Length: 102
Image 1: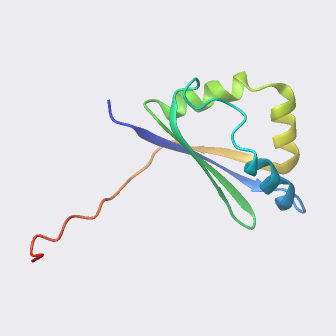
Image 2 (image 1 turned 60 degrees about the horizontal axis):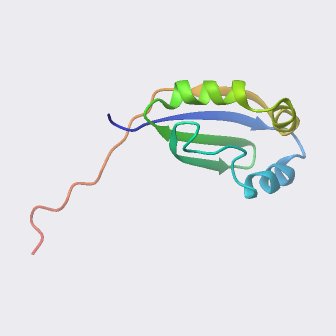
Image 3 (image 1 turned 180 degrees about the horizontal axis):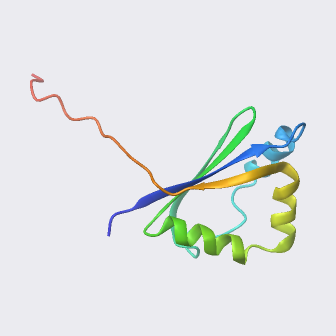
């Protein structure tokens, strides 16, 4: 089965970027493999956070993850970001080798 990706994007609450960066440096508060993911990335912008989940069923696994994280983890994240949204559909492109390379 092909690996797929899903992302969650959220707005960083005003004045909370530095706290969020510290939290992200600690790594994910869950075991990737146990939750069904093969890879997890976080992109931190000035005003937005993007979390990318990779695995066989990333949307389902991310939804399950939210329900299994402890209340304290969710509350902590809720103080740092707002308006989380799931981006369930992804597209990808790959470079093709140059057929005329010598």
